[in-house]
Image 1 (cartoon, rainbow, N blue to C red):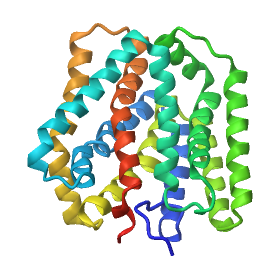
Image 2: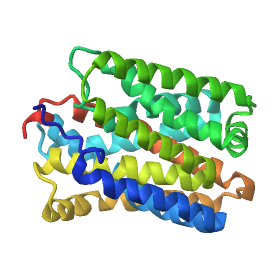
Image 3: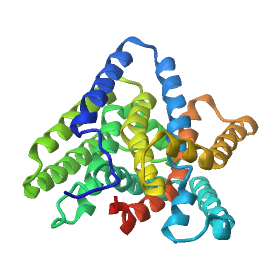
Image 4: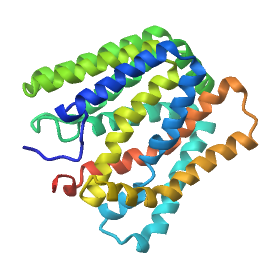
Amino acid sequence: MLKTLTDSFTVPKHFLAFFGISLFSIIFSLFTPIWVQNLVAIFGILSFGILHGANDLKIIAKKTRQKEGTTGFKFFVLYIGVVLLGIVLFFFIPKIALLSFVLVSCYHFGEQHWSGRTPVRLNPFVFYFSYGAIIFFSIFTFQYEQSAQIIYQITGVALAFSFFWIGLVVSFLAFLLYLIFSKRNLVHYLLELLLLVVLVFLFTNASLLFGFGLYFVLWHSIPSLNSQLKYIYKASTRNSLIQYLKAAAAYWILALAGMLLFYYFVSVPENQYLSIFFSFLAAITFPHAVVMGLMFHSKDSNEE
């Protein structure tokens, strides 16, 4: 059996717990005001969300077989430079920046969720991308008004509802065709489809930020943390988690401080808070997605 870094919660030992949390989140969203949902989402994104991308330099060091002290500063400067470049792109060419973020994130979300669990005989690129596209187009479709407003604030482009709906249908068909042609793990795939249905209910009833936040933290960041612990420390244990937190602390604090200083010194209209927030997440996603891709393609990823 293929051993992989990815530890999806659709396996029996995790499925019921995560499925239950997802259902509870739907109920929570039905009975709590939007500001409470947004507060919970922001806490999750700023903690687990940013944390799961805060140890990329350690992954690079292992991938390149370098001691952290020898090239650590060079990688750090390069990494921060890419983040700053992402921020600059959002200021000067926001259309290209946002499109790039969505395209990269579609593949990144799919890769994290499915890496090592797809038939070798089929090229996984379209599968990874279509799965991530389902997530994004589901958010854009079922939270159309606020999503369209944020996209317009960032890019100045007004997109019709039909654009997102058609994108969702096409992405789902591509995903479904891959499942059909793979002809394996059908029960596992049915569980995945069930979880996607739960996500749709969440995106429909929760606030945009809470729906995205739950997916980003529960479905993506926590499994990603587990994958990274296995790659860096060869085990997902309490001690490895403590080591991870210590190593990630500096970049995590730097990212939080940078965002807080921006909001403090730059006058941002209240109705554009979310636009800036998502632009910030996008800027730090670019280098992280590349690093995770390198990690999943490393021969070390299947050594366990």
